[in-house]
Image (tube, rainbow, N blue to C red; front, top):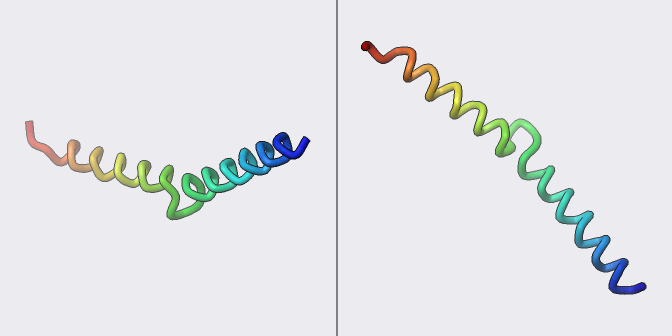
Length: 48
C-alpha cells in the first residue's frame, strides 16, 4: 500500500512539473511556436 501511494505521488509530481515546463507564456510550447514563426518569416523573406 505504501509503495502504491509513493508511486501515485511520483506520477502526480511528474505530471505537474511537465505541465509547468511546457505550459504558460514562457513554456516550451510557446517557445516552439515563436521559433516556428521566426523561421517561417525568414523563409518568406528569402528571394528565389
